[in-house]
Image (tube, rainbow, N blue to C red; front, top):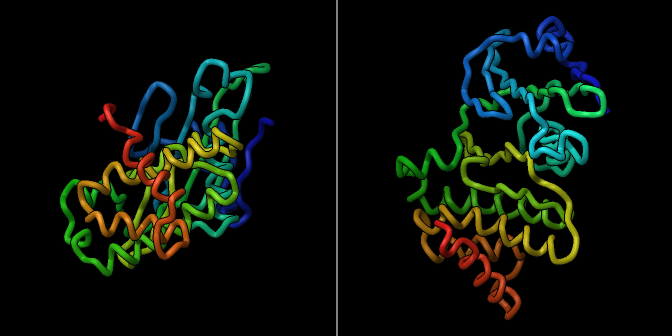
Length: 244
């Protein structure tokens, strides 16, 4: 369904955020751009906002069938919030159609202050990654939130370190989830393994084997691995073999 929504708490920004026309006219610092979308950062009343604008729905058939990527983005972030998973606040969202096809869409999120994504920490070998207490604190949050998603039969499908933010208090936030969805049966099991493998893809270079195992135990809620867990861990470790 086409339309535009601005959260009531942000009505004072209606001139900028109150319609899709106004949002596509906004100018700011361009952070990313690709054939589908762009992200610009703007500041209003001392607060930074991220404006993500899509001019394509995604793969060709998404123009007519299924959720456009931008709709999946805002729905998934709002779903995270309902589940108690810390995430960016969605301030405004919506799309318009060109006949039956997707036309354009956008989403505005409020900045999470004093945050960095985990991949940035990894790239510069941040000292916090060598702090066992800090790693354990973040690991427990990540394990819990990932398990909450998976218990709802939902897979993120791009659960990489770059899509996980951490603030200066060690609080973890989940962001950027345009391809996350609900699954059943074999496809659910496959997607859950992929989520865990995406996390481990970077973890294996920056965390010890003990820390990686501890994360899985936190995720599974077990004190030790059983036969099924061992099989799953092997699947996680081998998931990206030959593709790196």
